[in-house]
Image (cartoon, rainbow, N blue to C red; front, side, top):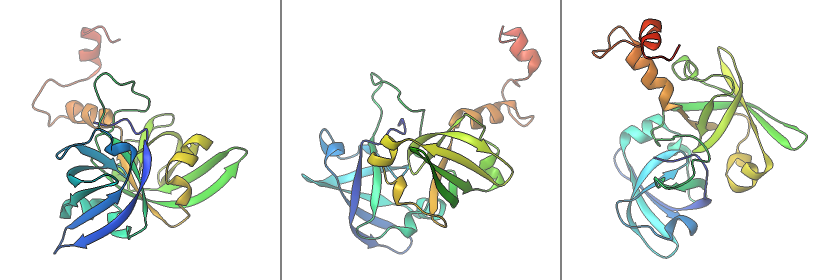
Length: 213
């Protein structure tokens, strides 16, 4: 589990392609301070397992399903990636709950500046947009951001200078792909509320009975 608060940006040092998978070597410093093999590191929004590491790098493996669902096929040697270690239960939750399991990718339609803020409008499939709400949270390449607006084809976020300076977001331009993870709470609520759910149905009667209304 992660928070979407990026700790540092790393650099892709090597890529070894398999038949339908890849092995990555990623240069880093901060996230390696207390790392061990088997730990998880959120890499551009994707939860990856550390298979080996040294003083300034770690190795990880990317499975075919990850390559299908993310923008990892666009990475090359020298690409910068956002990095975050897994959340400790004693940590402050500065962003929102992020699993590192990508729902899909979006494409940046527009980028513009408004005073100190940088805006991005991103197109996405309806299957993703259904979980995005104004003032809700979304993780873009592993960055926890607030949704400023949304419509039937796209959504927009506004990025503060600090986020711009410590993540890879400013490297993105119109036409680029970006990894999207929706707020997991919305997905669980939808599942539990559906008629097909095998558990108790969450509806207005359920909420009233349990003093939520």
